[in-house]
Length: 74
Image 1 (cartoon, rainbow, N blue to C red):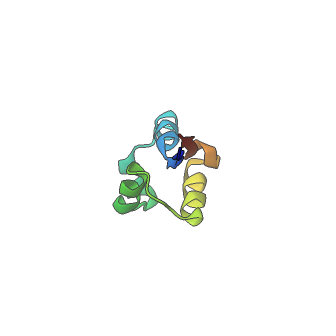
Image 2: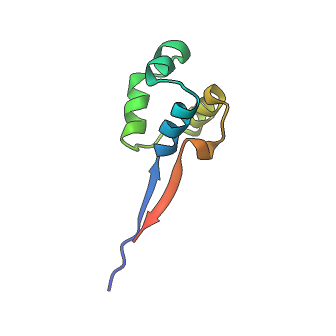
């Protein structure tokens, strides 16, 4: 029997953090210079760099775990 483990990084916590801090994606784009393509990458759980994570943490004054969560499913 082959066991398949799927490892996923989800950026769902980011959207909760944005809501808590009352920051819209519009504000990220226009006030902080976050690109639409980055927001698309986050929306679709695609990889981003640690530099980008650092930038987001700096903008939102939060921890990495407020932006992403790592899960494994079997």
